Amino acid sequence: MKKSRFQSIGRRRRFFCEVLVLAAALAGCAGRAPVLVPPSCGVEAVEGFASASVRGAEAAVKGKFAFLFRRQGFGRVEAVDPVGRTAFLIFFRGDRAWFAVPGKKVYAEDEAKVMMERFLGIGLLPDEVIRLLSGIWAEAGPESGWSVEQDEQGRVARGDRDGFAFAVREFFPGAAVPREIDLSGPGTAGRVKVLKLGFNPSPRDEAFDMAFLRAYTQKTWDGIMELLDR
Image 1: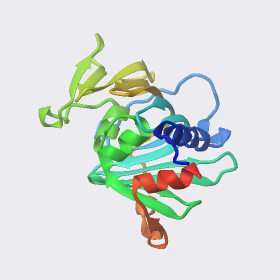
Image 2: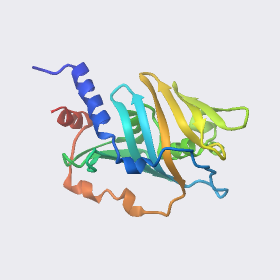
Image 3: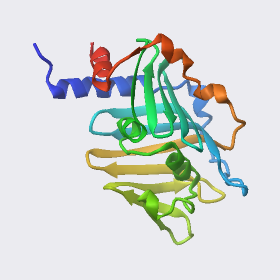
Image 4: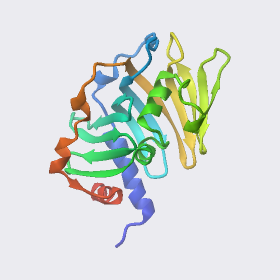
């Protein structure tokens, strides 16, 4: 019997909910939030851990993940299962992205914004993620399409583009670095909380190395979802 789209999406949502888990040690200890101030020389990269609870059109995400984003369009997101195995990886380079499932040795390629929207429910490029997580939007410019608003303290607190929006619920002490962010849009509602964040980590080209994909089978996005539904 052919599966209904509702059943398929439901299983996809369960997949994302189940695998987006990091070891408790990675989340850090609960307590007072650290003081975070972006370096005066500018933010070229961000690295850390975050939790997400987002329901989008294709998947629902609930759990924690590691991330690394570097200017000029580089990005990496990694989720591991409860026993520490990598559940999936997302690589970003320029306007393209690759979603890899090591357990199945398969991957799918698509536009970066499309892949990010599947993951967090909102289409962002790596450089835009850096702006969002650092709170620095000055260089975005009108050509980016984003309209941002500041609060009474001069911090970027809200932004929208093409019907999608973000709103900062909480900032880290020290400056205008978002700690908790609401995301919304057509078919999208949720929240991201930054658990750990570092600016301008030492460059590690190996973090973005995708040579291992040569041993994987390329699938369409729907093809990967069908494998995960089984």
